[in-house]
Length: 171
Image (cartoon, rainbow, N blue to C red; front, side, top):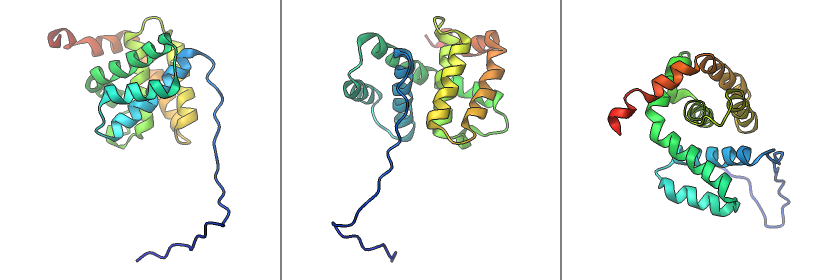
């Protein structure tokens, strides 16, 4: 049996609350929410649509950012296997199952944006992903995410081809 410390209701408990800076744009906020949804879905067997709706209700988002959240989450979920193959090719030193869940989903989201959201400039997708890694990842997350996405950004046409190959046959 484990000896736990005795706690009395009168004992003072210190709680550290980490406050993040507010996102600069609606899309930045949408990316944060999409990342939280993808993280939960990667860790659980929860129903995707129910998780999306619960997060959107909790955040009380306007229609435009809510649509962007749905676009990112549904896009990642629909293309996850192809994106994971891309990550394996460009992050060869790390087996995908050993990549932190948060980093894996940041990469998936950024890859989806790079390949399928033409309104997002390449630099913005990479910068936003690195910012998410800085906020939510471990100490080396920013370097890892930036390195993988830097290689991908230099080969954006190859990336788009890799993610669309076989997609036509599946549709």
